[in-house]
Length: 542
Image 1 (cartoon, helix red, strand yellow):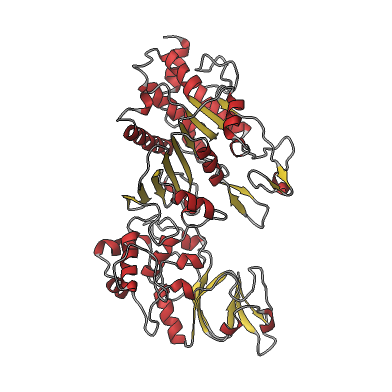
Image 2 (tube, rainbow, N blue to C red):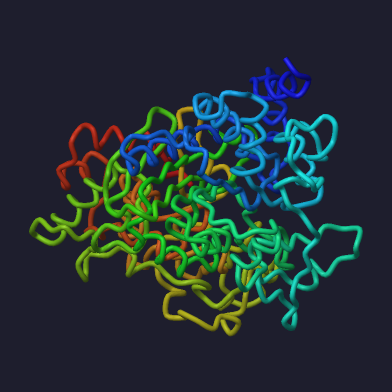
């Protein structure tokens, strides 16, 4: 066996521990993909290719081209090479020739930083220099092989990048720092950009990878803006046969600036697979991505409903269904929840219906306040003591204070009513699943007496004439039934008015229990078991 053949055989074997598994656990700044997840995605691609190509294997075709345009560790490319190496044995029997063909003709990548490009080349070529003595490729005349990287600068239009929206204050950096101006989304004509990169016009059959998720936007704290949607849009512009990416799941129902992206994705019937993981740590050990992660498969040549697999502690559910259910404006990530929603709407409408939209007058969301219920911002800090008989008690972030009535600019007619409130954002404690996979969903929740108000840290869930009505409403809010309907509509930890869109209102002359609600809407044992596997009990003593 030649030295090159020995090297190729060695590098394409599995290792224990796999160094790329270790790297995937290091940081969540740029989330590295573990090999196990990469192979899940490739398994999905393999099945989809076979369905579209008369059962043929994608790994047995020496003409199929792949690109990871935002490669980090190179794990997708490495696993693709491994599969092609096995699949092309009959087509190209000689190992050295086969590996060289795969590396030079079929597998391409773009590094997102100088460091990750070197890691990716080492993963794929066994050398950061594709022409070096340790490289398993033979025919390259450039040290970067087919894994390209060059420093890219942002194009400033006033204070932000014209391509990715990065703030100039954060990313106008010196030459010794990474710009995070990712070339894949910094081009007017991405096909022309690829021709310039690789020196030839290549039509890629498969675009695959795990793009960067967000950029710091210069706001307070850990404020950041999503950018993964820009990579999806750029990939579609390449018109590949297949596109598959790992991205956060927050786009299903929320996410800053993602409304247009969500609408486009949910109306695209070429999205044929979505695999959703409610807890990102199930596939990214040690990395908590708020709202979970998913991967999707887009098939240019196939249209229809989507195979949706929902993965959570306690099991996986798979259903072929529309991405956008009638009457909904978001993707409902829990397959089991759709039958529950249909039963609720049927009872509230008085007839069976395909739409998930509650009729007018039956929507709990209509009694939920908007942002800044009384005009007080999150950073408002009132007086520590009450100085006037007309002062109002303010529930604010971190505690309570007093404010003059004149400081309130909105909803002043609600000051002297009984009110039910909850935090606008689910806290880490409420949002995280327990060991059984159940969440509390709502954070600080309770009743405000007359003469009390809240800052925009909170929302009002209703206002009432009497304490009894408010307490009856609170009994409803704390049911598992109520909170699972938030889970079906919300994404991540932001619980704004829109998160209550699937919840029906009730008669608050009486208190409510889960058992009464299950019976009212005719939920069966399986539906009740689903609810109670998702949401844990919540005490009224909040």
